Length: 71
Ligand SMILES: [Zn+2]
Image 1 (tube, rainbow, N blue to C red):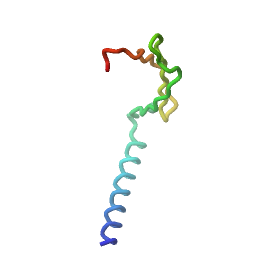
Image 2 (cartoon, rainbow, N blue to C red; image 1 turned 90 degrees about the vertical axis):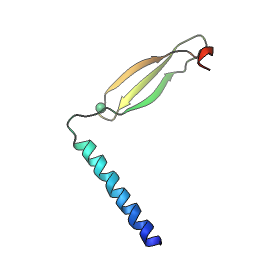
Image 3 (cartoon, rainbow, N blue to C red; image 1 turned 45 degrees about the vertical axis):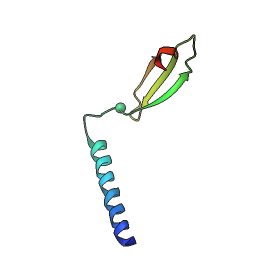
């Protein structure tokens, strides 16, 4: 029973590794940005977020202030 589980986990790990390698080797790099809050949005002010990709590409985006209608 445990051996079967181990086999499944190994297979899953290999599968995930293949996907990771395929993504890494893919020339058409798909940006994967990590969100980072630069300025927190308040009721009166817009906040600013910075998105950083693993390739070093970054961009900033203003996230709108918290509005009541979005509740
Ligand atoms: Zn990128």
